[in-house]
Amino acid sequence: MDSNSRAAHEMCAFGVIYKRFKSHVLMVLIHTCYTLLYFTAEAAFNNGLNPHVMVTYRHFIGGLVMFPFAYVLERKERPKLTLALFAEIFVLSLLGIGLTLNMYFASLKYTSPTFLASMINTIASLTFVMAIILRLEQLDVRNPRGLAKIFGTLFSLIGVMIMTSCKGPVLRNLDKPLIHISRNNLHENWMKGSILTVASCITWSAWYIMQAFTMRKYPAPLSITTWMNFLGGAQSAVIAAIMQHKPEAWLLTVNIQLWSTIYAGVVCSGIIIFVLLWCNKEKGPVFVTLFNPLSTIMVAFTAYFVLGEKLHMGSILGAVISIIGLYLLLWGKEIDQQQVGLNPREQPNLTPEEKEPTP
Image (cartoon, rainbow, N blue to C red; front, side, top):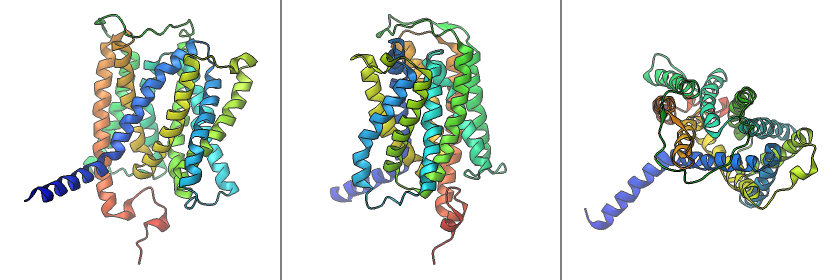
């Protein structure tokens, strides 16, 4: 084999690997960005920024960033937006932004980034159950892949429960923290924060499920991202006006408040929502939620090594169990993808008309 043939073979092999694992790499990058968001948002809230105001601003920023891309790149392929479809996108925005993120970031004022990152692992289990009920996910208990999904879901839940309830011995910090985030006294009402977090996880799971249905009717992820940001920003503005009556709360100071909001808007509300929609369309809602344990691990270890927070043995044990659950679920899903590619009639994310073979 000459050098040109060898290079072509290597490029072909790389292309196959890239195509197979592109979604996996994107999901890892997404949760890396989310990890940074946890700490920048907490610092901004402790600096006086209202969570509802931040959610409002970040999604208007995300909408403005994504609008030109949606207008230019999807101008010819964007379906007609009917009133019924607009109402569906409005509800999708309400689930994913208006309700979920307002409750989620409000709970950050009363808990901690590590706790929030641990609780989002329940989203994978909730989404899996909803997907089974709505027939978006296959489950055959007589097949090893079906058992892998069940045990993977259980392991993820057990890992979260261990991380949040079984503290265990505290690991001694290796050195002084590299970064110090000042905390106020709001981290006392853990009951209120826990209720808000659990409620946000439920609506978050419903948001992932609804994405799969909406993307089939309106397969334009850039446009949906733009609409969701503007509608979600408007919904959050109403919530913020109800919850926050001081006009000065809407003024952002040129410090962590401003930079955290810009980062959240451009990266998390713009780019990440688009990538999530794409991954949901390619792999399904369960796949997207399977990577949530990564945020838990990244946040816990970043808090320990960079911010000097306490790390308990229970957190490490729970993280390991969650990772095992993640890999079990991924294994079950990977076999699903291979079999679905061979038999389109078994693909759960297609409508009955789409499942029919073309003549």
